[in-house]
Amino acid sequence: MRIEVRPTTPIEGQKPGTSGLRKKTRVFMERNYLENFIQATFDAIGGASGKRFVVGGDGRYFNKDAIQIILKMAAANGAAHVTVGQGGILSTPAASHLIRLGKADGGFILSASHNPGGIDEDFGVKYNGQNGGPAPEGLTAKIFDATLNIKELKIVESPDLDLEALGEQSLGAMSVNVVDPVHSYQELMETLFDFDAIRAMFASGFTMRFDAMHAVTGPYGHAILEGALGAPKGTVVNGVPLEDFGKGHPDPNPIWAKDLMDLMMSGDAPDIGAASDGDGDRNMIVGKGAYVTPSDSLAVLAANAHLAPAYAKGLAGIARSMPTSGASDRVAEKLGVGSYETPTGWKFFGNLLDSGKVTLCGEESAGTGSDHVREKDGLWAILLWLNILAVRKQTVKEIVMDHWQTFGRDYYSRYDFEAVASDRADALMGTLRAKLPDLAGQSVNGMIVKSADDFSYNDPVDGSVSRNQGVRISFETGARAVFRLSGTGTEGATLRLYLEQYSGSDGAIDLDPQVALENVRNAAFDLSDMQSMIGRIEPDVIT
Ligand code: VG1
Ligand code: CO
Image 1 (tube, protein in one colour):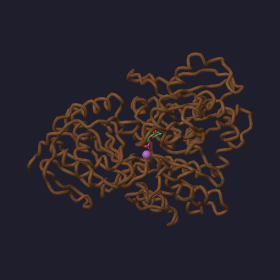
Image 2 (cartoon, rainbow, N blue to C red):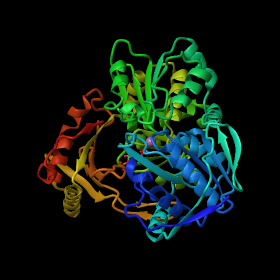
Image 3 (cartoon, rainbow, N blue to C red):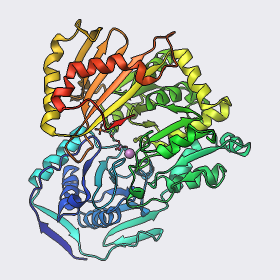
Image 4 (tube, rainbow, N blue to C red):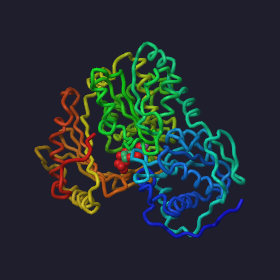
């Protein structure tokens, strides 16, 4: 089989963001765009020779073509073996699991996650390492560096492989194993949760709607919820992965999963509603008339995880991303285990999980997970909720109310300002940063600032330091405002404002969050001078 050694030149802008490289699909389809990035990744990891990889994606437009290119490049670069999901499909957590299970050297996950898909929408690629987790910052920096110095790439000339045929094939000297995307993942879930108890709950009439949002978790939901757990057919909706996700945003939040929210707030609501995102690593949980914020969900799961077999012995510790509310810290304190605050992005949890310092991790953006893989895991979170419901025999709402009564409530909301001109967004952040040193002790909108800084993370395991991870301003009233710029967008800048207000251990827990957050919201607008800096204070999306 002939190996083409193709001369190429660096392409600008191939710097991975919060979660891999994300660009417009048409950009990825330009000559050598994907190829350069893949070659740079192989170069950055010291070559692919003799190595084993996992490849799969969320099924969006260009997924299959990209997989063929990666397979041909892996073969040309001397890889020994690649495991691929049938039809090119693998959820992000399933890919993480396959890397760990097969002791692979790494894997490529093709997804732009919650971003829309299609030829005029977004595409993405992420490299995960041996532990199954997203490449840490040190490695993404090396990959970026390699994209700037690339001179040639290697690819075999060969017809496409058949990604529908299960089993082994060969591509030159490299073997390719096409596997069922669900099988191993389902086996893992069966070891973690009490499937008998959940099955009995469904058999006794418990009802659910799982909205797969036309994204990757459809096959997983059908097999696990309707298959293994016996939920009635029709429990899973939008369960066939589509290349354009039915033209929706596969982002499981009250805005983009509106149909599910409407159902859950209606008289016909099932006992639980759940949804997952494009690549299956996020989750949304809604009870009858009760949306559970991701920050609260992490806290409730942490407080109740011992009810599931995998966590019966307790948790080693709990980690949350910096903008995630403090609710899980309160649980860690009560459990007497460590709590950690990391920058946004799952890659920062890897060391904590690998070293056994934490068992559960979560992000306010609807990501929750545990040490079972090295990615956040949407269906895992949903199954843990089901396991807890099966044991406690209470409603979602009762469990959340009970949690707030015990710990107090962390009112929470995120405001996203999308497609802001990058220079304006940078100016807002810059002006805010300049104010930070003098803020503590000052009064803003009637609230005294307790502390203000630009978050810097010192990884307790490898000692690496990550600076400028977001501006956080805490107030004496138990409120906090966080400002940061998104690292997953593909157009202009997205400014995220995260607002939080703790009720206190015996304060009111039944307020409308937007009312409870009014003071901190106005303080955040004042402090950032948002109206004049970006010309508006109305967000595009409130979650
Ligand atoms: C967003 C979320 C972050 C998450 C990341 C990847 O990043 O805020 O919490 O880890 O997406 O999630 P950013 O930089 O846009 O705020 V996913 O489901 O896109 O892999
Ligand atoms: Co995702």
